Each structure stands twice: as structure tokens, then as C-alpha cells.
Image (cartoon, rainbow, N blue to C red):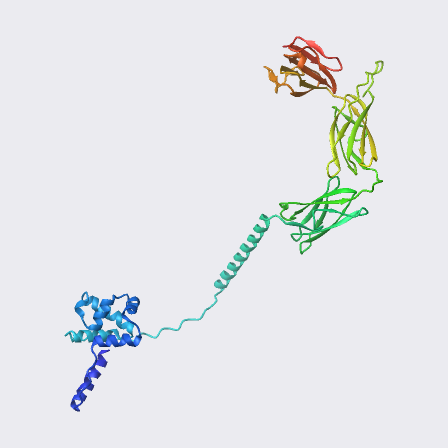
Length: 452
């Protein structure tokens, strides 16, 4: 209640007394608080939770028992908060509390100075600098998004999947000569299809990531490795897809045979001739050789005796039809024969003429029958791998040395040290337990020396 309201109430009371009307006494503050709480429909415990004022203090306010309260300062604070909670005018409640406790002093009226009329806020304006800043912000965000997409793209390799054939291993009709592979990958990715013995196939995925490739089929098992490469990042798919497509053989067909090495009329400077190729419908491949004569014949000299032909070698055939093996030959001209045989007994044979003409000295030293200490000089110099003090080698050890003119070997046990010179086996040149030094300088025969 303001000072003006109090003055009006006093005037009305005076007029009532003048007219002989007795005004109805106003309710006391405790009853007023109780009535306001009941109108609000809450109990003291609910009021305690809402106002954080203890129940006993609220009850003391509603009884008018101010002695239960901690002091005047706390009482005024409780009354103000409680009045606000109950929807009463806190100034009017405090005035009534003072009046009822014998302190009728009224607060001085407070003159409220009107606030100046505020200038209306200006609407949102767009200055040229603000527009430029906004455009730069959008450009930076777009560039950052672009960089993020590119980094993600560069960090992630392309995917690869094969849709047709649905299985990794299939059999097709015996008349099939090609098969159309279909699959998916990243849009624009380069699809590589590798197959042993043939050039790889290469196709590109379309905008939807789909790709198609027609591959050639040969009789037997055809193996394909499918992978993808991103043309921009050159990243390869983490895994490749393996496919096996088998074209059955006709029982009456003989094996097919291709010899990739050795080439016909090739010359080799050592006796380890690589023999490799591929075949189809073959259970095994056999390699043999026949001596044709010396590599070269000097005028006025008798040709050397024909060396013993090596034993035929049976080479296993891999699942993809390839085969490979080294074939040891001594110096001279040889006819190497490769024969592929089918399970039905059909066979196919190819022959390659080769010449083995050793250059310099090739010496293979084998320790056979016990341990042996050896020391080696290559073209008159200590062999670094063996060392100046020599080394002791255990049974079964094989060492190979190459020189331009000569190789000299000191052995602590001549009987267990065996030599193969330029592809020709010489065996042991002495007795077990006997230390000897041998000089190898072809075409001269091995010679014993006194070097230690």
C-alpha cells in the first residue's frame, strides 16, 4: 500500500466517523497471511519447499508470534519473501507489521522520476563491409568443406566387388571361350583384372560405380585377380577379389604347352638353366637334356669327351598351369626337351637348343662327410666372406665362388671337400683328414699348390 492509498483510507475513515458509521476493522497480519496461503491452496510444508523458509518461521508469522523469529532484520526478509510468494504487496505487509508491533512510522514517499523516452532501435542494416565479411565467411566455410571432402577421399582407398559371377569358383561349359565379369567400385575407378601368363585387362567404372569386362577363357582353370585403383589418388583397393573359372577338357585333347624359358639357341654363362612355362590339361611336366657337342672346338685339338647327361626332372604344375625349375648342365651344346602329359596319357613335347659356355671360373665347394676348415683366394686375393684366417664349415654346407682367371682353395680335410668346376663335378681330390691346397684355372686341370 502506497502513502497515497493510506491517506485516502484515513480520509474515508474520518468521513465515516463524521457520518456516524463505524468502519469494519481490517484483519491482522497473521490472519491475512493465513488467508492468502489458503487461497493459494498450499500447506506450510509446500510453502517451505517453495520459499526455502523453515516451517516453524512460517507458522510463527501466521500466529503473529514474532518472538520465535531470529530478529527484526530476518523477520522483514521473511515477510517480504512470503508476501511475494502469496501474491501480497510486500511494502503493505511490512507497513502493517510495523503498525501492529507499535512502530507506526510510515516510509517517506519516493518520488519516481519519469524515464526519458528511449530512442527507437534502428533496424538491421547491411553495410558494404558487413556484406564482404559475410561473403568471405561463406567462401572460407565452403573451401574448408571442400578440403574435408578431398582429404576424406584421398585417405580412403577405392572399394571393389564382383557381382557376376556370384561365386568365386565356378565351372562353365566346355565350349566357353570368354566370360563377362560385372561388379561395382568407386565412380571413375580403374578396374584391373590380372591373370597369370597374360596381359591384365583394364576397364573403368561408370558414374554409378558399375563396371563390365569380357575376359578370355582357356581350357582348364582360369584364375583372375580383380582390383581397383583411384585414378586421382593412385590408391589401390585394400583387397583384391580372386576368381576361378574352369573350362572342362575334352578327353581326347592333348595338353597345350608353352615354354617361356629357355629361348631357343640361347647361350648361358653358367649351368643353372631356368626352365619355365605353362600348360593345360597336364598332370606333370618332365624336363630332360641330350648333349649335342662342345660349345666351341679349337682347330687341331680333339673334342672333349661327352659329359654324362643329367637325369630327367619331373616338375610340378601349379593350379594356374605354370611350372618352373632350374636345370643344371655342364659346358657344351644341349637339346632340352619339355614334355607335358595329361591324365589320359596324351602328351605334348617342345625342344629348345641351348649352349652353356662358362666365362671365367665358377667353382662350387661342398662339404660332404664331416666338418672342414677352408681358406679361399679369388684371382690371387683373399675371399672376404671366408677371411684371412679361414672358416670351419659343417657337413652339408655349399659355397659358390666366381673369378675371372683362378680360384685357389686350402682345405683342412681334402676327402670331405668336393668340387664342381664350371658345371663339371670333380668330387673330392684328396683323402679325409689331409690338408691340401688346390688351384682351379681352366682350361688347365686342377693343380695342387703349397699355398697356406
